[in-house]
Image (cartoon, rainbow, N blue to C red; front, side, top):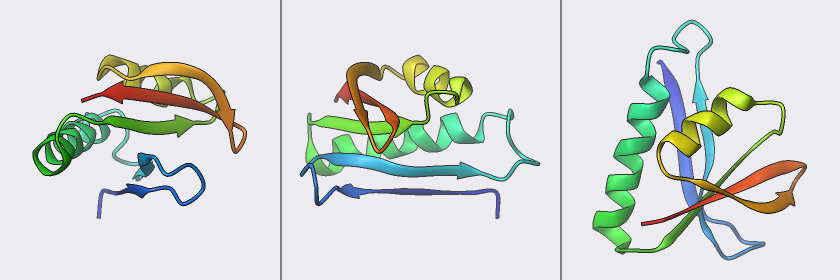
Length: 90
């Protein structure tokens, strides 16, 4: 297995979000995370239409934040669970 991705509606915020994107350290930097996230965004659009979709990352995880921003996510200014919150309008 190369990685794992999980999404759903968060029970605390009632927001649709990607709550996990994990790529094995031996496969990082090869574009798997970006491709998986792109496919998830397509799935979300096809299933739910144009919605706000959220994710988050630890502030020091600049690679994850850059990945999400390269796909159109924008920082919301919120910090939840000690993580930077990002949102994309699909």
